[in-house]
Length: 443
Image (tube, rainbow, N blue to C red):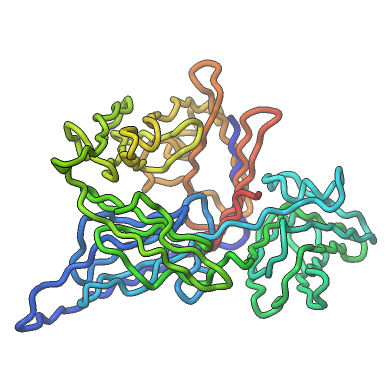
């Protein structure tokens, strides 16, 4: 495994503001708490608790580096914080984790496919004094509201339009390494479109390269905001087109339904679902789920002799192991639900520890001098800084032949590119500009 770390020519810094405030108690009022808030589809929040005291805050984040929009539908490159207020409600609506619109190639077998193949290391290069028009299409009519595109070496111009609209967006690029730019296009495009046209024009006596392109668009099944309504004894999982109800432990949906609300033309339509206590009754039988299997190297909570329909458990891995379901990482935990059939909604995940790696290059003397062993000391607070304008190569070996199925990379301040190569047929480049959106994967 080879890791190449290349910092840019600018260094960013992280500023942190902490405020201490005196909370004046209110007389003749009992303390108020907030229930667990709703959460976005493809997102989570921390910390997770059964209840929250006034002034306590949580932080929302999206899984897989997806962009997040707040209640004003404003793109937030970082996490969003919300606070429990004295009225027992949260300070903002649930944010939304957006996914890019799936693109199709208008010309089959065209070289433009490398512009959206998910690898920043494969770019579509345009030669000197020439220009190329790349064409893509949506699955249906939609209004583009945001886009991210990545370009590599060279200089030139990108002209992006959405026919039949006359409006277009132009950006002039001049950079030495692949870089990703995000733009809101709400003020530019207002009409529906099915097609995208990207004209790449290098400057005179130069060339330009396009390495990635993502478009975020809204259709008729798309809502700007999360639902305003809330539900007792449950949480809502909120997406752009639908909202799913998850009842709390010891509760179940009254009629065994899941869809709480659907979106049509930017308006939510509510279904009136209700979470009721899930207790066994003498006059009828309620299916129960037996205790599930434990994941090796992990556990689940709560542990009970049996679970009734609608009850949920949470799988957790011990130590620093990561959780997987099949070949897909589930993050720090996994929740499953007891269904009416007496079976769990999903199988048992497994916990996996990182493979042991041995540093092959640089030499032992260079390791002691450069302290690059910090990269694999399991402490995220110890980092190996790379001076600007330089490059470093790190080569590691595994304990025998293995198939790599997941990689975790951590970095701190600064602007750089990191290239990881596992074999001749697989390599991936990550572009990190601290404090900004990271363009990591494409549809």
